[in-house]
Image 1 (cartoon, helix red, strand yellow):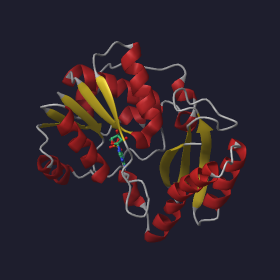
Image 2 (spheres, rainbow, N blue to C red; image 1 turned 90 degrees about the horizontal axis):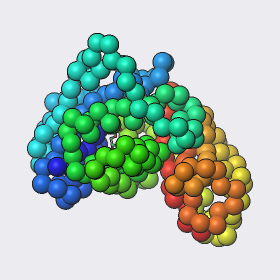
Image 3 (cartoon, rainbow, N blue to C red; image 1 turned 45 degrees about the horizontal axis):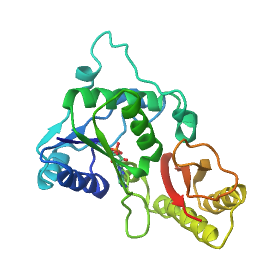
Image 4 (cartoon, protein in one colour; image 1 turned 180 degrees about the vertical axis):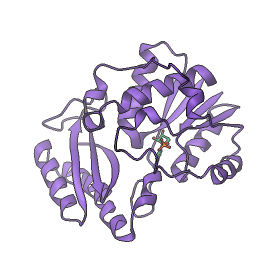
Length: 258
Ligand code: AMP
């Protein structure tokens, strides 16, 4: 059995994970749950886009066998008090600006694994830190589950697909393109033998900030395994960034290959 965990409002990225799921096993379960414990105070839990009827049709179209869409009260019953927390990996990237986020993610994924008991679970590389955390969690807690990472699906202009793209105005969407462009530009520089991470980060930040309504949360270049900062790029390194465009928090990443 294969599990694809999601928060719904499906786009081509989710559907691509489902197609991968079909290839990985004979029964495909998609969970659809906007998990309250991974949202911080002031984040977009209430505003998060939802369209269950459309999602069910799309899932059916991809040959999904079961959509598991519990209520929050079924996942976190009265008196709920057990959480799963990793000690190191959340201390980087998005974990720094979203305290408690990965505790919520690790907790809900652990619960989904225990409820669905899949042999395989599929996660997108777009949420690279999340994928690293799930891989670690499965090792640390002895889950007999194979974790499959799936490449980021993008619009034809490079924008990484995200349910949150629905928040963007047409002008903000143009600014949002600066994320993937900055990552591509960094790879081009690395290919031309630029190796200094600080320089690459500074130039990416300058480029993104030259677009209206952008606010860089962080840009990091780190090891893909433990997400520790890298100063000089000698091996493939993860470049990850989070940028607010208007009020919308967008993330993207790319492995820079020297
Ligand atoms: P979400 O509903 O945003 O929590 O995403 C559910 C799953 O889909 C996660 O494993 C995400 O990493 C993955 N995902 C989201 N956007 C994309 C994308 N553009 N390409 C590939 N996977 C994605």
